[in-house]
Length: 259
Image (cartoon, rainbow, N blue to C red; front, top):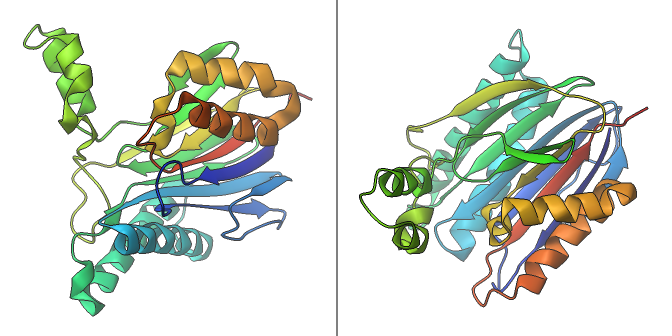
């Protein structure tokens, strides 16, 4: 499989996103903002921080670093067990940071951790950082959204508020679950079989400036260039949207080779 990771500050003066990629055979494994390569197996983790500039950046970078290290060294018998252990240790690391510096109280992050095997992916996810699958001209959201957006949309679907009000509701981005060093209320765990030509996109919620059809169009327009071209084009499309309050946006793009 081929992969690429890219990040942008957007309209913010600071970066609270973090992403790490660890490959087998060993390749690039670093916090560099741009990562590109090819591998047989891949573990990727992405986190979107919250709690102010310093706290959010520390939470996301700490969670990613501890998650990858814990997954690599876990003695659990299967992938699911290793993912669960890595998630718990990442959350405990945030608790330790807050305990050592009470001024960081309230910091936290979302997290999506994904293990790519030759024919499948397993993931664990907390928060609202989305993971998309592009397959045969369609795009699907793979992981659960732990923000209030799905709950607000249910109210609109039930006729209890208009869709216009639902889409404009400022509570849409409030999180129902996150890594804050305390109990995580919601955790999404699942597995998916991969097919040749599949493209998986892990992103922070800054990508949601683009609609899913827009993301699909960008992917299809740049698929021949592989993950680096897709990742660059997605960030360019977010920039071109011109949101005055554009959040940080980070993407990790992984494609299953067709041959």
